[in-house]
Length: 198
Image (cartoon, rainbow, N blue to C red; front, side, top):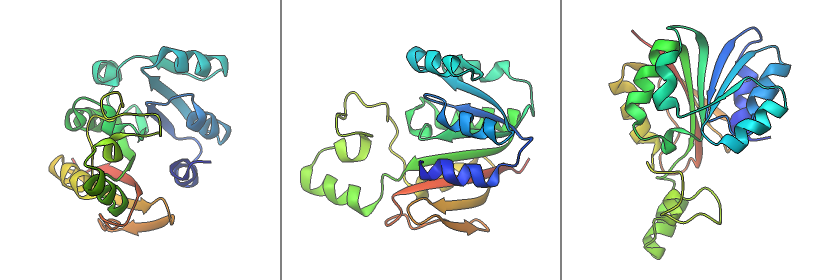
């Protein structure tokens, strides 16, 4: 099981209502549903949506940037973006919209400032090390259009008046509280749990 899924499953209580944005094949919402969590998914890839529907999952097809206004305010306990924030056109606008519909926002992503990625970039001169998610990706065809470091995301969250409730270094599963964050150089994958301060 993916480390970010493991962390999310541990702290989202049963009875919660969640929106999983970029839910892919529905693995996370399937696991959460088994725990008694009410789940809604959004996925842009139609083939993945069909797979979700075949599993009986509540998933709609579309670009979250265009359909977020269709959800009532404060409808969800948690809005979840796992490995999704770096793929949307306007991450700041999306997070601002999610503040209206969810009480908590969970964001996980691969840290573009990790020393391994920076070293590969320095020696190869190629953005592939910063952008690609799999060995088959190239910089020009990856979904990752906004490389993001832990420090970058911390600054963005605070500028949007989102409180950093906790963060996790997903490699070690170490939890940080009270606005502390994992190392910008040595944490490869991170999860942020944000709370709307307004």
